[in-house]
Amino acid sequence: MALEPHQLEKDERDQAVTRLAAYLRRERDEEWGDLAVRLLFDTFEEQIAPLHYNRGIAQAQRATRELADVFDVNLESLKRLPRA
Image 1: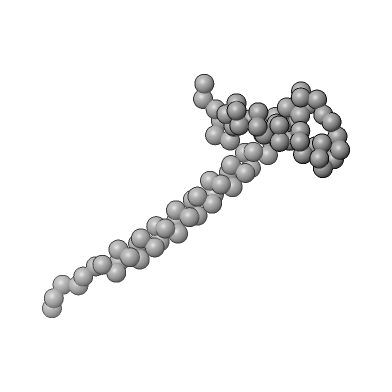
Image 2: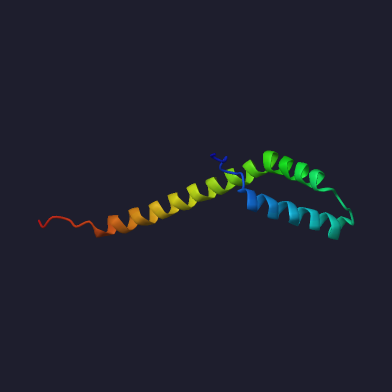
C-alpha cells in the first residue's frame, strides 16, 4: 500500500497521536479520548501536512538551484581559451 508523500507510517502516526494527547494534557489540561485525538491528528495530516510537505519541496528546489549555480560557476572557471 503506497502512502501519500506527506503521510506518516503507522508507527510514526501512533507516536504523533501519543505526543498530541500528551500536549493536550500538559498545555491545555484536557484529557481527550484516543478516537478524538486521532480524528484531530487526521485533520492536521489532511489539511496542514501537505503545506509543510510543499514547503519542503520548494526549499529543496531552491537549494538545488543554488548548488547548480555554484557548479556552473566552478565549471565555467575550468574552461580554457585556445592559444592565439
